[in-house]
Image 1 (cartoon, rainbow, N blue to C red):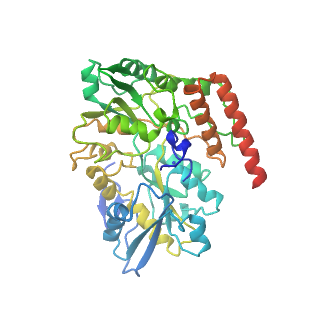
Image 2: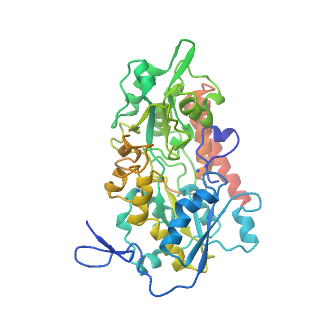
Length: 445
């Protein structure tokens, strides 16, 4: 989920950026004995099939990590299925593969990447398969399901399998050094700013930073559910008190004395290094990926706190940004593909991955999150419940032009923080840029 160039410095990539029951043969039954299957039991011996899984980025997953995380568990559960991993690269972009006649059975990626399937007329309605296999959507975190439904305009074209964290990682040693209390769950952004002010300072020639964060990530996932583009008018209007409050609220952390006033200081990779490698940033906001070894070294004395909330929306976290698995209309094995992705949301798979500390679960039952990393030393003893908000914000409308709005608002934030433009001017220019970009795109389409 990374993108080269200046915009990638602070931007979550636009498109290419979760009752007691018993199990029998992969199905579940409730107390009444009615079937509420995660996937229906296999009937008889099935013919061998090969399922092509496509990932629309050259980062994050490799053939080995895909197979160890998804492929091998699927193969073990369904011996007749052979998962094959393909991903974006030179000669393997989705348009190139389609032009070459390559079959793709399952596409998985972020909501932004998944939305691209609509542009290419590659959405596949899985509601008939959900009904056929009596798949219970109520098992999943409703915030994640709402994202999938929003992408399908109320229908269902994909299943959420896991979700990135929404939390603050913090360096306990820096807090101890300056005698500042650790961040807590249920803080507001005002609380966080007060902490950041105390920790953005220079000591013995070493500049310390209170907060580092991928600024652009907070825009499309904003907890206030402010839309990037109005789906009815297909226009943006960022000249509102709500957007003004949102941008100035978190941007003030980066205008404190001690922050370098240039793009390099806001480089998302550079900010990660400030926290993980150089260990001179007290806090790092994570919204895009679960941090693992070797990024988190043994030398880092760390813990986690919940992401702050806005006083306008108390108790509400950011919008959900799950990784969704979609069946492609090109598949010749829709039932096998559905059984495979349904298994990835099963109690068995989700608990296994959660205990291993590999993926944050997509299920609403809190016991799955509570089990996170129990079989791994990395997150054991950490405040893991803070990795997932108690309540996700409502998803903003997905439109073909959200990327323009995201870029416009990111530019406005950079202009406000680095170029010190008046916030009203920055937001007016962002509105003009976004609307002009939309009109140009429409004309070119």
